[in-house]
Length: 140
Image (tube, rainbow, N blue to C red):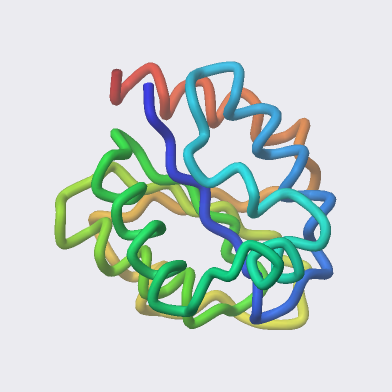
C-alpha cells in the first residue's frame, strides 16, 4: 500500500520526532512515499539537492496522486498540509488527521468539519497505533 504522510515542514518543525514515530508506524502497513517529513534537516537536504519550490510541489502532488491513503498530523498549523488535504479530499482519497487536543492551536473547522476527513485526537503515538491499523484495514 502506498501511503502519503503529511506534517508541517515550513510551518514549524517542533513535532519532527513525533512525525518520525508516526512514519515508523505507517511503514508497518506499506510504503510511506513522503517519509522525509519525519526526518531532521529536510529543508537543508532539499536545498542541497537543488530542489526549487516548484520541484517540491510537483513531487509532493505526484506522491499524493499515487497514494492509496493519506494520514496527516495536523496539530501544527501548516498551509502546505491544508493544501495537501484539500487535494486529497478532491481526489476522494481516504484521509485520516491526527490532532493533539492539548495543543496551542485549535484544529481548523475546515478540517474537523469536513465529513470526508476522519479526525482522531490523541496524546501519544502509542494511542494511535490501533487507529492506524483500523484505518489501513478499511481502505486496503
